Length: 496
Image (cartoon, rainbow, N blue to C red; front, side, top):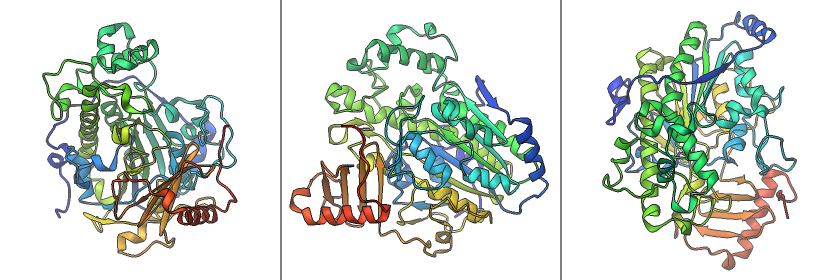
């Protein structure tokens, strides 16, 4: 393995353009908070810098280093310097529950005490971040770190329930494009908006949303106007602020791409799809059985997603090339991960349906890179989850872990040692459903322990043959195992 990654390796085969001009707003800390941070800055920690890269909706099997034909040269390059987790499964999904898990470094599921939160979807597990709630960024800030967060995530960046996170860091940059109106929707024709939607989804609401999305992307012709380009270009601005602080920094770059809707520029679509095609593009999907798509729309769906993945990877590479050129790699611990995947027609479904907790939705890429590149290019099958990230980074920076955090410290794996917490199995939840996995079995059920599906991973690694009816004692055994781990008498179920 080479000792460092240079700019050419990170830019990959697709190339990258310059920084994008963008409409963005940055939350500034209140005067009292700023004074408190200035006082803490007097005690400069000795630990390494921290960089966490979150790529939303990125499937494990759509990353090149994991055996995919999808082009992700920049993630692959980072993997050559990182420990790669082959069994990373979020314990809580989707977007907002996964971010709570990531930021608080504690289990969110089972969400037994959940109540609907104003301004958020009324789906189990969705809630905000409390004003005094402990996060690993707060812990690092108290230890003297400069902290920052860059995102175009509609909830973390703009929803009032996540304002405490925005106020808790030295610099929070929220970037428009996934929400809001950067340009008038009238700049995009109705025909163009309809072109980017399956025929079944050309309702007034979907057309209006796609029209505004395309307007925000300036017609999806210039990749510098894509949301991933905005995020990673402006992350360089925040990185400059971090370096000016002249103390160790902890920076999160949280990119909503390749979350739907998709409208990647032509050069990336041409990598995977017939360029002569002129029909409707599946630029968005429903969370339901795939029969609403035409045969051609369903055939093109994986290619559209793959193009969005490659486009995101290119702009990640643009950021990382500058990061390495600045000489920061040797003093920074880096984590790259996703919150969940997306179903692209497998088993007759599309989107993120909560009852389809198969690998397409729950298996995510996760990399842990030490400053000295220990175990670079190697892998581990230890079950890992976003809620392990904070605990691990606090350990790597020598920062005391708050008692509220119960994520596993993964850093011993960098020295080929086992983490303190043994994980012979893993489970997690999404809305009213939950999943279980170990080295042999995969189980999906709802919170009432109904609708159970069981798969033998040795005989059926693709999870196509449900053998639940033939293994009722095993189903009960697994359920009791999960209840014991969760310290509950039953799992939560909300609704009728």
